[in-house]
Length: 335
Image 1: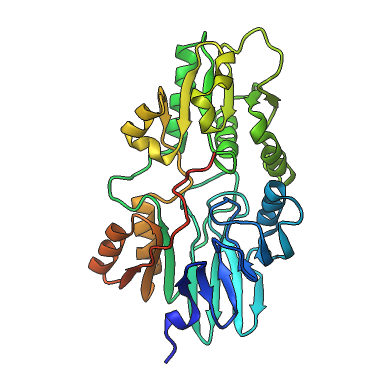
Image 2: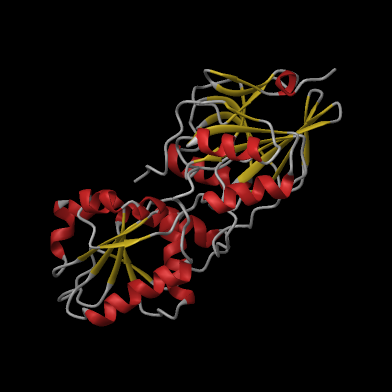
């Protein structure tokens, strides 16, 4: 009888597939790796061979240089790739550009590794695709009932109302360089903001990469541009700049931070955030539980995050669950 752990099992390097001899999102250099997305806690340099979507490979090359792995192979969404006896298919995860779930099939057993994911619409990446499976391996970054993220458009509307109320001030928006910054910019465009948006230099290369992949971010200007003042303007920068010397060039800036963690008001106060925007690239509690309820897998494995509550919910709803407690994955902590 084939057991799920015969196909995928946790090791110090990450989730290991023995029949295919590869790891998924390994945290240490390995001979063969399948990478779900380009955030640095999942996509590390130094592997022998890497399989990922083309967008993820491009992100890794942008961040680590062209020689980030011994060899690379791009897989389109839905394309089945053989690794010895194992079939691997990448399907959209809805997290950031190029993000994928890894669907692993072997001898009639199907296991899906979600990577980081969300279910709500994101204009900068392909939407999450549910895949029926025997075992669903999920993240649980926001795996507590208190985390219920509001509507994205409503959060952007709050930002634009603040701009109207304080036209003499600039708004400095802290947003993670990969995924969040581009999503916030695109949501602003959809909300009708047509003026140039000023961006920190740390975002420029990834913004250009998104543009090459067909994500229209509209007119962007460097935040170092010569300008009498930035009153009434929007500046997007890494979160670390909110309290940095760099931010002092702007007139009495409103400190804005776009993150799912802004639902925790203590975190906003600790960072000196005046306008917290609850915009997350991870599934909230309702998205996590509704996904498990939709898939009804034979088992739920939870890789990282707030594992206990989600495991308990699954058990109460008839889905056997276990926490893998994998280490090395951060909770949306990239600048």
